[in-house]
Length: 211
Image (cartoon, rainbow, N blue to C red; front, side):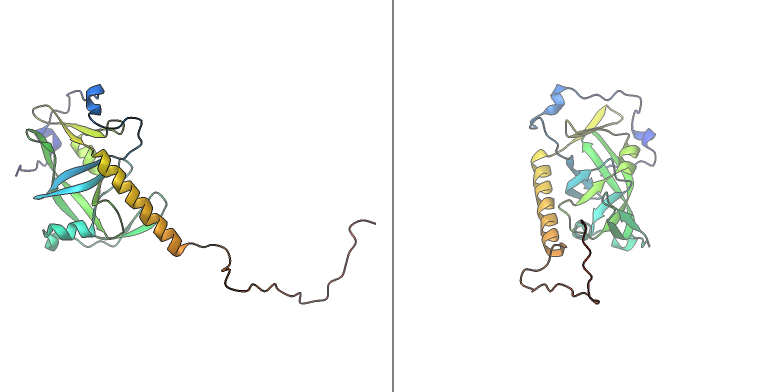
């Protein structure tokens, strides 16, 4: 396994230009709004269904994925704070841990140490790569090409998104949200329950609106 670097400058050339061309479209279906979902090597495990989210201020691993990795549980540092999603929903953090993450394919690849927060919430993704990892990597993200590129010692490395998996994850996420809405929705009165109108507490006086 490649030894992770402490500083991004030691294993990359940050001055090299990074561009996207028509060739980067690959086999993706054009005119899409799909998310970038990639596979990463975290410690010694190939973890699929990792969402690349430039709007996230933290890197996230979901509890189930972390449990399946069977590694470094003793290094999980407890924390007493929460993270908040786009909707403002609060998610309690189970802990945080620093792990090596390998981006790209040999030979144009990089391994960097990153801190992940562990959460336990229903999700179709195993984790999220946010701004901390993307900035450390010096990555350039193209949602149009479903790809991220980053500098390495020998050239530009890349992680290619899986469009089919991204769509499956999104469909599963919508299904979970729909189920939650049906279970916890606040709607109108129950048609099975008779609704009784309130009675006035005093005698009403009729007032003509027009002469």
